[in-house]
Image (tube, rainbow over the protein chains, first blue to last red):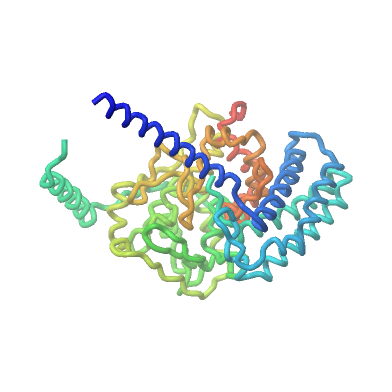
Amino acid sequence: MKKATKTIGITLGVCIVAGGALFGAVQLQAHEGAMGVTKERMDAMKSFGEAVGAMSDMIKGKIAYDGARVKQGAETIKTHAGEKLIAFFPEGSMDDHTEALPAIWLDFEKFSNLAAELQINAVALEAASESQDTFMPAFIDLTNTCTACHTKFREEQED
Amino acid sequence: MKKPPIILAAAFSVVAGLVTLSILFLAPPAQVRDWSGVTGDAERGQYVSRLGGCVACHTLAEGAGPLLSGGAPIMTPFGSIAAPNITPDRAYGIGSWTRDDFAAALLNGAAPDGSSYYPVFPYPSYARMSTQDVADLWAYLQTIPPISTPSQEHDLTWPFSQRVLMRAWKTLFFTPVEFQPDPKHGAKWNRGAYIVSGPGHCGECHSPRGILGNSDAARALEGGMGPNGKKVPSITAQALAQAGWTRGDVAFALFLSITPDGDSLGGAMGEVIRDGARHLTPEDREAIEAYLLDLPGTDD
């Protein structure tokens, strides 16, 4: 009887540890997330977000206006926009992690135009970075492009 | 203890009976407003149309369709519903309506023929609108070009395709009462509360719903479901604070679609901002923020 209890106890313990490890491994995999081109474009978008977030804080007055930082952010966006951005979205490049919608490849011309527009607006933003007055309208143009693309071509954000 | 099936069946019959009775005999709830001294201002009405987000649903996206001449189908768990043509066209729009017809639609969810609208048309929120805003909106709608495009048919699954059921739904879940300011708060906070709970109808997507599409006032703005069946986040003061939203962030996002972490809001919220929120005055966007973040010091 005692031995049986002990055996059950050990078996349960092993199951719990193994289950926990497996769960951890699955979690890790989910966190590692995207691979290849999907990961590249997600990283690019993340760098856009960081730049735009900092510029937003300047407009909100949360941080002081910093023309050099705006210029640098605009450059980051410029170098990853246009052809580079289009190349990040080869036809059907969808995996479990992507938030891209299939609509991209149904209207690739529109998508490509927005990618090109982003680059043009990033160049304009870079040129307008010297003073806060010129920066503001250029920033609005740029973010309009972000939103136009996300409204049509990105999956709904759920959190 | 498990309830015997017979009791469940009896309870079900009673509920079904009550619902049937209410369909047949009870008039759905309705409110009456005092229109004396109220004159509509079309210019202000155009602004109210932005507050109410009319364009986002009643116009095909991206300028593909003429203004307010009917929108793309909205997906619901009960089927799809397309927002109709609300231009002053007499045959296909609302050109033959009176102001009272319009007010009954907005404030009571009732069509001119007495039938009830599906609450995809957010009249449970619009019911809270001020009489002046309704009059202004009506005046504005008279001024837009009439478009003779038929509205798209709804495509609902049975039994939800039976519009008469909406009478019972209204009896059970609809309380048409005009917005009342909270005296504990100031004008700005209350303006925000009015926009959010009334014309802005934020809760139609951001509040959870019961299985019959009814909203739960106690859980207002705790997160719900969007027009395409996607989860919509909670926007309670607590949830926003947890997600890092502080003073300035909400008003900014409602203007440029940019969240505090630099992301650009797309999807349905992108449309809400593009067609509605960004056309508001900065004061109104700040009022919405004061209410949603429940900011102290905004009681002026």
